[in-house]
Length: 150
Image (cartoon, rainbow, N blue to C red; front, side, top):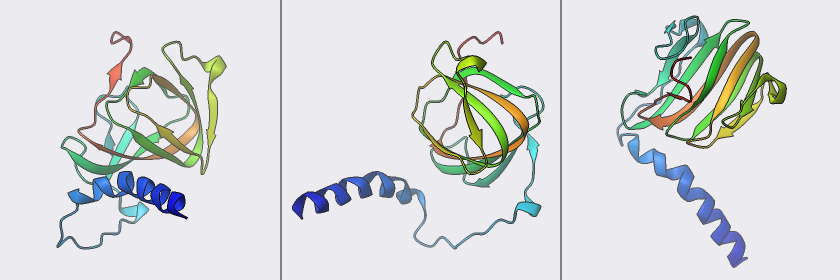
């Protein structure tokens, strides 16, 4: 029983760590998909769009984004300085991992797929059909391309 309590406490610490960023007087917030403000996703190849659901990805603290990618879109091998939690809301994509990420080794990501992507892990993305991916992370958000000339 003590082991279970310790395990539960250990799991709760990382989950509660980001909650300090929520103000004590913060109010609940709901965002309807039809009212999202989509904009070009700066720092990504042209064609991707982003909508901020919560927070400010350029500042320290939690944030949530939705990315909309057209069919045939690609993001070359890159990494991020913070952990990411990704959920595919619609569409189909493929992701490959490591400095030698390639389409041949890419794993399929379909609607309702969930992924934990640890900070610093190289990965590349291919979009097979228009896809919306929701991303939760902590800022500041950044993208580092393995080969910046791409």
